[in-house]
Length: 73
Image (cartoon, rainbow, N blue to C red):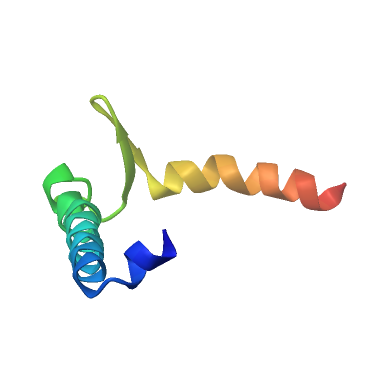
């Protein structure tokens, strides 16, 4: 197996596959979030579940008391 990986032609193919995988992953992660439309209209939007929108303030209202309970223990 190591001899196969040392072959220049094989490594060339492997590197091109890795570059392609990186580019495709970047497109799905970085560019794909634009098409979700989460923060296009409302910068205060944290999530959207179905048609229900959850704002950052709503998340903080639930998160802060839970965090305070954990710190008080």
